[in-house]
Length: 316
Image (cartoon, rainbow, N blue to C red):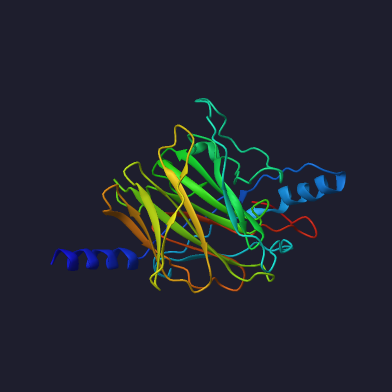
């Protein structure tokens, strides 16, 4: 009877809808800051991206949003050149340990392609307690990705999604995040107050060289000993857990999977007991430049970043 109850609970958890509140009218578009090192022409191109690159989080009301899914339309403009390579490298590297100061600046700063990317958004200091720190980075089919950790404070304004406070992270894809990505948190409106595990999924079908890119990322509390990827076909493998800097009370994981892959990601305690799980909730991303996100830990989805052939008429 207990096993049956546990299976029913797990099924309900996996199939429960993930709803994110609709952003208020007049919300200011989130502009990513770009910075690069190189020739004047390169700086001019990056300057154009600063003006035209927009990372929009699109929120769908409860009445029309499918369960566990939200799609973000790419802004108009010139799409980034594909960075993927058929048969390209797939790897992951733990970032060097860092020890941020207690008074570090949490405002948005410039980024450049010589270091793993972090999503920097003007005004982010209203919800950040720490800066965003890369905990791992690598490639998927030759395309660069980065996984960042950070701590947050409660926020309920209209400039960003609502934050409940606590550990969060970003999974961004592209040398400078051009493919977009997801934000996720241990505490959201869809997770328990004492949650020890949260995850979210990201799907992008922009790169014609490699086809859909599907990735999952999440974080776990101290009571979690290990995290496993359990595929529908019966294969199980343990996922690496990446330590965050001091002051961020979580460890992080990521995994990229092939299109159509099904299964679960499961968090285990030291005694082998399951402390949380989430389903692989993206089988196929929408075609084109639209991004999709899902999962009970999902905080937001960033769109593909574009540049404009000419300056837009206005920027919100």
